[in-house]
Image 1 (cartoon, rainbow, N blue to C red):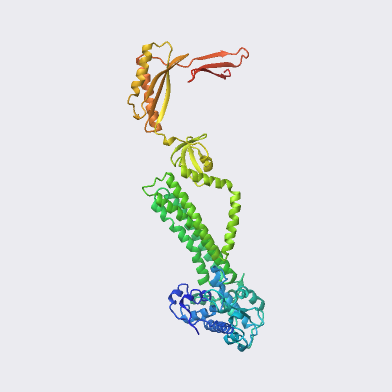
Image 2: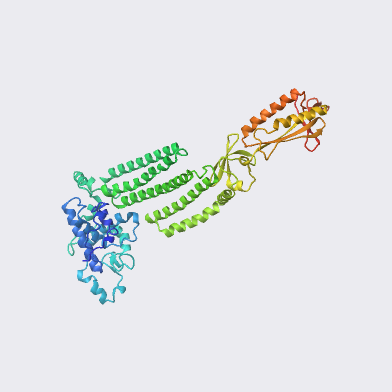
Amino acid sequence: MPTLRTNRLGRLMPLALACGLLHPGLAAAQSDVELDAADTSSPRATLRSFIDACNELYHLVNVQQYLDTEDPHNLATATRILDCIDTSELPEFAREQRAGEVAVCLKEILDRSQLPPWEAIPDVATIEASGGFENFSRWRIPGTRITIARIEEGPQKHEYLFSTGTVDRAVDYFGDVKVRPYRTDGPEVSPGFYKWYMSMPRHAFIAGAVQWLPDWIRFGRTFGLANWKWPGLLAALVVALALMLAIYFAYFTLVNRVYGKRVFAYCLTIVLPIIAMLIPFLFEHVADHYLVIRGDALYVVSFCANATAILAALFVVFAAGNRIAEGIIASPRINPLGLNAQLIRIGSKLLSVALAVVVFLIGGQYLGIPVATLLASAGIGGVALALGAQDTLKTLFGTLMLMADRPFRVGDRIIFKDYDGVVEDIGLRSTRIRLLSSHQVTVPNDELSRSDIENVARRKCIRRVADIRIPLDTPYEKVQAAVDIVRKQLDNHEGMDPDYPPRVFFLDFVPDAFTIRVIYWYHPPNYWDYLAFSEKFNFAIFRAFAEQEIQFSLPQRVSHTSLASKETPIDVRMVSGADDQTDYETSAVRPR
């Protein structure tokens, strides 16, 4: 027989793993062993290789209740069985388990069917005489629904294997014929092969413990699974779930403690979700390797474990993206409160989303969902999402405009419409502002990008414009003295910018006072320092005017009582306007 190529061993491993012939790590140890491969050059050669290998494996089962998983001969026997099966259409996550069950079911069907003589089954000479291999693509075993077909592409091209349709329906075929008796002539049969495959353990210790169990626990099945395996499966499931919950709880606790404080410690917390991602694979290994779960129960376990691992991988992708962004922002060259930092964070989120889509597509294909279906679903879902999320897209474009224009950054005090506060966060959808009243407001980015924004934090200095009024009967000398006093107090004052010297002028005559206009600029624009200086300036003017006996003029206030109503007095106050006109403010005041 031909020799099995080394690179083919990994592809033809499913039955060896599923039947308990091989530890998961044994493949690498045995990769350099030359193993006899099945002869699949014709339907006769394939059928004979398959039956002989199954019978050989059956004799090993009869000798002991478990198989030596480190014996290369056992590995070669299981591999020859798998050589005869086309597993290309099986979902990758269940390929190993499904192939083992298919092989056992096919053998049980053949043991209950009347097979034709070997001479009647097409071989290489028969095929060549009938017109060549191109004209002989498939052959069905008489009296069965089992088909052996010629492979036209892939690693096993031009070999005759049990067809993908047969592999897909082998378990159902066996369910239809399992009540039939075993045949008494023809090739050797292997009674109870399927029963052993579904019930027997893999290791000597477990096999010895199972030997003492009653037959209804040992061989009986509930929902297709041997009764003795259910307690172990449930216990493994509880332990796996408890470990994952504990790891995620520890992760979120640590993140809350170190986020924004210690970047290195924050980056190290990624180890915990990575460990959590590995737990489903560990659970699947325990279920397959130690408990030897079989049938539909194993497919459900494998699917759920791999789906959970994919979701955990998506979590790791987003968590890793956040840590990469924070690691870059921790560089001394980047201001953590600047727009560059926000752009890095948003860019990392977008890259994480793209990588998550890739992981989702690869994971979906691994679970047996065709990539074309996933892409089509993603396309239809994308169109529906775009139609239903127009406002969100507008906000996203608004975010991009904010990033391009950079009208403010985190930590800046801005005035937007009726909002006056400090920018706390610039997100992908909205910006959060902490108002001076300590309330927080969230504003969509598209609204910010379309409106006028006053960035108070970027002012070069703070300007004050004040009018000092003195009575109309003040002599000329004292008016001049008042102007000189104010100018002296502001001469080279605290916080003065040489480019913005103070301005003091005798501005105007109004009906009730002389007006002195005072303008000065305070630099740097620290608001609290500005208020402290203004207070000192006000007290200095107050003292200097008192020393010079210069009085301040107060706005004239006259109260009248309306003759039409004895209950509502009318309060009239004269207010001086900048346009040299007099305005009258009138308010109704209820009598007390």
